[in-house]
Image: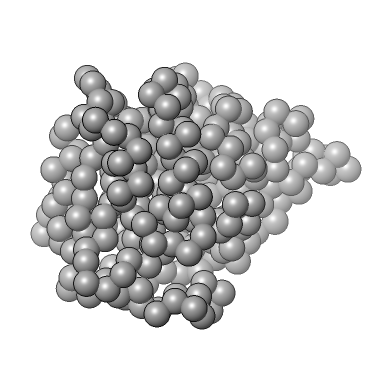
Amino acid sequence: MSATEPTILATCGGLIGGEWDDSAYGPLLFEAVRLARVPAGRAPRVLHVNTAGGDQRTVEGAELAAARAVGVEASHLRFFPRRNVPSLRDAVLGADVVWVSGGSVVNLLAVWRAHGLDDVLREAWQAGVVLAGGSAGALCWHGGGVTQSHGPHPSVVADGLGLVPGSLGVHTDSDPNRSPVFRAAVADGALPDGIELDEGVGVLYRGRAATLVEAVTDHDGGRAVRITRDPGDPSGVRAEALPVRRLPDVPRTVPSWTPSAWTPSPELVDEEAP
């Protein structure tokens, strides 16, 4: 673990279709690895957590192959049918990045809490392990959001891990049913103020206060919108589009994985880092 301060990258992305393989690390997942600022001379360690999807083995091979293609050492943390590691703490704190995939955030939260993973993740976050993920794997870090865990109709979940005190709405452009539910929940106070994300967009938070640093996207036109409760507005909320930085494509060759493997935007540069 090597991030200089607590770091969360919450996204609507992750693996993408590969040129030669079924899957590849997309720009958002690759950005999570870069944020870990892994010391030169070793491969980044990414712990994939697929609890929300039921730990299906069929996806693990694709994740491992995608990791190898970019010089990443990947492993998996499973809870189904039983836990696959003797020490959750060793597995999580031994990673540079914890990447959580999508599925049911309600199931994810219940399983994690039953095993005490919620406390381990908080410790890891404070110690510099980058916490990241897509969809349910983005929503989980927040105070709450909107989910389809209970069926096809979006509903509110308000008991996220709360590392980010605000709320998150995901898949805004691909599922038009989500945004009205999310905005209504913010308007009536069921959810705190938050951010809506299009597909392929993520938001970066830094520090123990989980301060929003920037929004990033893997394609032109991706949007992130801040939703704030506003009783004076007829809709009950105020929507403000955030600036979004376009990420570069993932390199075709294996990166050297020095802390400057990719040149970060100026606001992310740590002047004391090597």
